Image 1 (tube, helix red, strand yellow):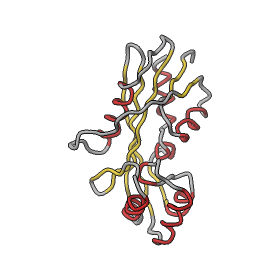
Image 2 (cartoon, helix red, strand yellow; image 1 turned 90 degrees about the horizontal axis):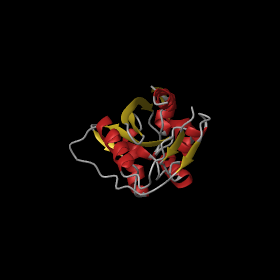
Image 3 (spheres, rainbow, N blue to C red; image 1 turned 60 degrees about the vertical axis):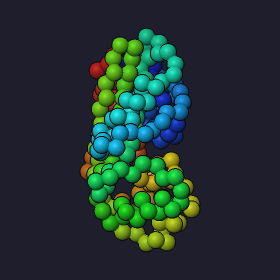
Image 4 (cartoon, rainbow, N blue to C red; image 1 turned 120 degrees about the vertical axis):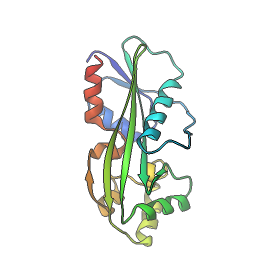
Length: 188
């Protein structure tokens, strides 16, 4: 692929995942208001935010560049869990998802100067119940405030609480890399 990927993400996990595809890429970050219409549900929130980030890109894309934006949400009990804003909110999120099955949606937007495509991936995550003490251990030691649903599947919480997933593991980390790769190949 002779195009350069512009990854517009502050997420170290997304940066690590896109690096693993062995493609030429740069990281550009900028702030975007991540609010969304209240009537949106599940995957529609993730795709809305991914596209909103792409449309807010403040720089000019060169002809050989593809902008990649993404947003990951956790959907449980018919509502969204984004990133927690406090330890208390983190605890409440983790308490809610432990002992349940929840869904993780990542919306992805790929944009060039004359094309924009948006898609999503869905993964189901089954979490077993863990003690309040274990939840507080995780919050204090791993500070999961930059993660949707307040957890990382690739860290201690994933090791101890996640029983199984149905769908793409990397989607739960924040970027469904196999699907992203396939879509990028179509944009050559």
